[in-house]
Image (cartoon, rainbow, N blue to C red):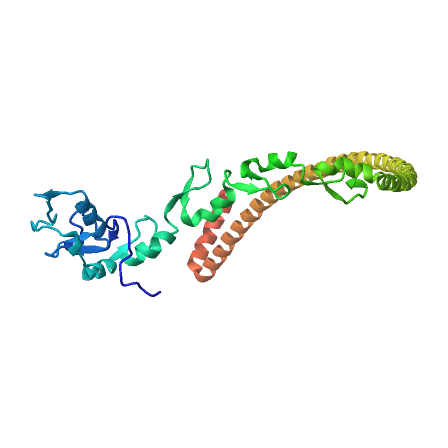
Length: 340
């Protein structure tokens, strides 16, 4: 976008903007103390906003009838000799600034801020211009608010009267130009007429409405006959099903009775079998106990026989290897025999 190198002509005082970083204090107006707007300077180069210095002179703040420079130079200001400070304007126009709206991320030169961004910033808060609405919203939310504002005037599409959005439905209920359905819509009349013409429509289309009523009656009669036939068929099917169901229920009852009888017999047989098993197990336990006692007695007898046999074998072995012992044993044995 091409930049206008001259500051915008404005009837306001200085620029009240947020400057990014520091800037020369000489760019502040000596009267309103804001950043100079349309810079004008005296003969000593004291810069002021053009509007500020003109109002200052018009107020007649003077000494001895002369207007003294408010910049402190004590020089008389001649309104006809005020000069535009082009250099100061250029410095002001290129000052880096940011938007004063809190959530807006915009950054740019002061001239862009004043001439373009301030008028288009979506983050500036604006009041609703619909009479009676006190809502304030961000400029970027204008379209959404405009669709919802209850105080917005809407034009009735039937009578062209303007009504508030909040009253539109109420208006349509009584709007004589609103198009409504014919009361005979359900039987086939598709004509839409204005509310004011309903009675006239019914009078002019009596024969058509009667024809539609007759057609609807004939159709309903036919449908009723078909329904009656279907009901008779369904009734016969239901009766057949009831007969079949009763037969099946009777059969199932017999089956249940038979199963119960078999179950009782099975139960008795199971009890007998359990008793027999218990008796058999008891007998087995007695046999096992008797066998265990006999086995223990036989084991003791066998152990005693084995012990005696081992002693005899040892005696035979000793006698074979020691004859003297044999004779002594013989003699001892003889004596033992005599003694016995």
